[in-house]
Image (cartoon, rainbow, N blue to C red):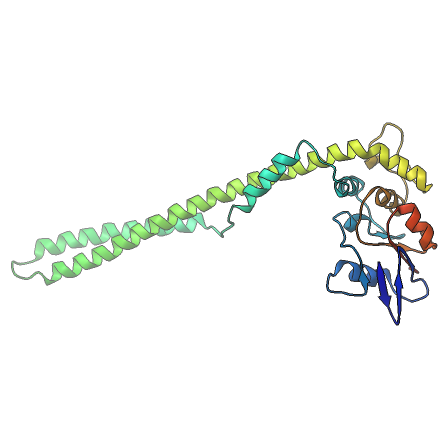
Length: 265
């Protein structure tokens, strides 16, 4: 890890910025922006979004974060193949803006226009004298035009109905994907719950999960749970740790088994 704030450049797995007046938000921005050269190192894994900042204001969704930690270590579930298939199906569906009612109204209007024009054509043909074909030609041309619009409106309706079916299928697939994602998270959390407890014990943080209870029953400050999950994860990018949580960058890096930047706030 290379950290460059101000005139000094620091390298290593543990960097102390407490005396530099650099807020945690600035460090996080530098870590997450690939074009920001102030912090260089590995790119953040998905779990970094959940446990990348350890401070007294940290918020935590234990189940989501713990599942992300498991994923960062390559954990899989029996739901993953179907989840990937559903995701591919969703990627293949377009999402047009469909107004089915308006398309039906246009077909009805065009059909009424055709009926009206056919009646007019019949009247013109009945009144036309031999040798005076111009009125018939004109009304036939007009009838052809409205029939063409009618057929076009029906085709647009057909496409709108197909798009509507796709939209309904998309909603169904999105529901299925959400259910699969939840099932996968539940499976990962169940499998990693004991590791979560052991990580809290190893860090000696003021937090716990009652025996035989799921991790969502976690009790304690959110930063403590996030620290335990960070210890289990492979976050990739450095973790930003407030001095209020741990002022010793070397100790924090060793405890969390990750590169760490300690800030004052």
